[in-house]
Image 1 (cartoon, rainbow, N blue to C red):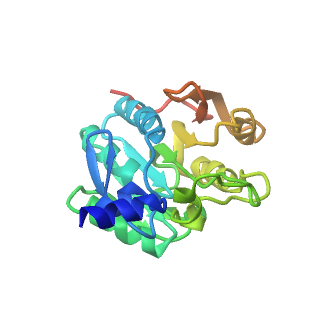
Image 2 (image 1 turned 135 degrees about the vertical axis):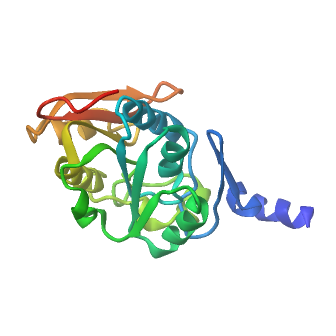
Length: 231
């Protein structure tokens, strides 16, 4: 059995698929074919969402494109009183999220994030997303990604920003005035991704942030309007 695992890894099958597990912060997630494997870089994105949620009493948090459910589950387990909702478009990935979020209280839905959560319009405190952000036609060096991560979790239009534009629009609809959005992006999108938010006029305090390796990794922005309720 061990030799079989070595042979699978030798042909660049993700280790997480071989073991069936992925580690993220304090979580151990079930993963396998059909779902994006959580990356260590995303831990700082989850932390930013957690920090924003903790500034609000009983925060309402939405995770757009939840994949394995990893960010939603991190928020649900680390923010007391949080009411967490998550959506995933890929039915295969959604089934992994169901497994991982079982018993957590996370409200999981399957569908297009562009039209999700109409019942929460103007009622959300934090929106977080790790959307697809690779430009169509870009070369992917790692076989673990190219051959095993779902295409829906990777590609995002000619400039890699199509999904981020959708996140901007949905977050603007969902958030209370003063609510915060946190969005992961590629390390080469440290200017272009925040620009998606800055140019709409619907956000203040648009900032970009680096990961632990010093690479541009995610943006935060605040919905225009009066400050939200805080602790």
